[in-house]
Amino acid sequence: MSHNATRRDFLKQAAVGSRVRDAAGTAVVWAAIGVAALAATRQAPAVPGKPPSVLTATVGPRQGAWTRSFNPFRNDAESRWPTWAGIYEPLLISNRATGTFTPWLATAYSWSADTLTFRVTTRPGVRWSDGQPFTARDVAFTFDLMRRFPALDHDAVWLFLEEVTARDAQTVEFKLKRPYTPGAVYLGEQAIVPEHKWKDVAQPATFDDPSPVATGPFVTVKRFEPTVYELGRNPSYWQPGKPGVDVLRVPLYRSNAEIVRALTANEVDWASLFFPDIEKEWVAADPAHHQYWYPDTGPTVLLYVDTRRKPFDDRNVRKALSMALDRPRITKDAIGGYAPPADATGLAESQKRWKDAALAQDPWTRRNVAEANKLLDAASLARGADGIRVAGTEPMRYTFQTVQGWTDWLAAAEIMRQNLAEVGVAVTVKTLEYNAWDDALRRGRFDMSMGFGSRGPGSGSGEGTAALRSDLRCRGGPGPRRRAAAAVRARRAQHPALHRPAMGRLQHDAADRLPEPVPALRERRTHRLAPRRLSRSRLATRAPRRPSALIEETP
Image (cartoon, one colour):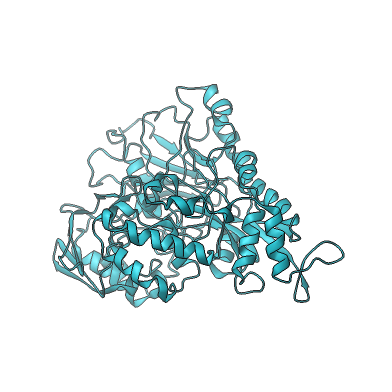
């Protein structure tokens, strides 16, 4: 499958930072080539009379048609890539691999001693694409817009923000209601919009922003059609000599197979998708130019169940579903062995130093069909004459949703269907086009669904863990009181060494409750490039905005 990076979709998940949104063994040029990626190569401006240099990229399979929307406050299913990375830009880029920040539209940042004030110095000399200067007022305006229109506040920053003030043309102060050091990620990675344009937008949540005014490397919509669009480079971009190409072209492909054909035909330079046996089937054909990248910076992929309905509200039933899953087989047969199965901590291998070693060995994420059947029997879910268990008066027959065109997820869903049948749960796999799947997951319109977790801020930056964020944000509600003390200690901590005890307690608490999304396996995302012209380009990904859940781990 291929993924768009998610809730924070490109900038956040990797070196660039946050929103895309994203599969097991996902390969190529992932939609995650954000600002940093496209700005990585130096190239002189286009020379009159010479054809423009073009980078063709794909964000993975999508259905339907492209709609001309570049609103950075809308989710990735509604706005076109790279709205959050290559058009609008953040103050800071959070590097999930190292737990560090790279200043972007900011040049410096600091916390007050009581961690109630986060101060940012904005970068001088930056201009919006219409020539107006970028200032701290634009930053304060952006956050105030999110306060006045809560639908824009995807990360719920106003739950911990008290006020945002532009102290002068280059200084912004964020006052917090309570200590919350992970807030630096969400504040720093928020895309900033120009006050002089957006102050006149009456309905910013539904505004398409078809002709954006922004600070990024690609700001001009040169061509827009239902199946392809092209963005032109910003001639006055604040990083001299960047981006490295004149035009970014994004075609629409509806399946992994279509992308593979396009890559093979040299029609695509960068792509993101699942590619089985990548060394043999991709690299071997042209080792000098057929390259790929597996960044360990993404979220965990999860199996969501609707806990508002019985019997999924019973932790032992969720535990039984988890123990029915054959994670080693899913890992081997569906995702080509690209990543190991997930464990009970919910943390990626790159977060190994934060894992509770004993918890990682907990048996509820290991296949045990006999024990799963015992748990379901104990829950009074007896089998009917057809072998299907009955919950109350209703047979346990459910629809299992996944994404159309994501072949690895479809293969994983089919194996899970077979696994669940062994314990008397009948599942029908249903593929939805990406936007419909995304909307259904966000709105809770599913019986079972594959989905992404949220990697969350990296622990190295004074931030929480994937397990914590996945659990707390699963359905948008607050966590139980018993987690409060540990969570407060983690939020206040600015040094990683202070996090470990609190994070261990949070991992155990989440595991004791058995998170509503059931962990099944980890997913490793592959970024593949086929650049004949840009073989030395560097990539940086931005993560997608998506609800949390726990199946595979996407580095």
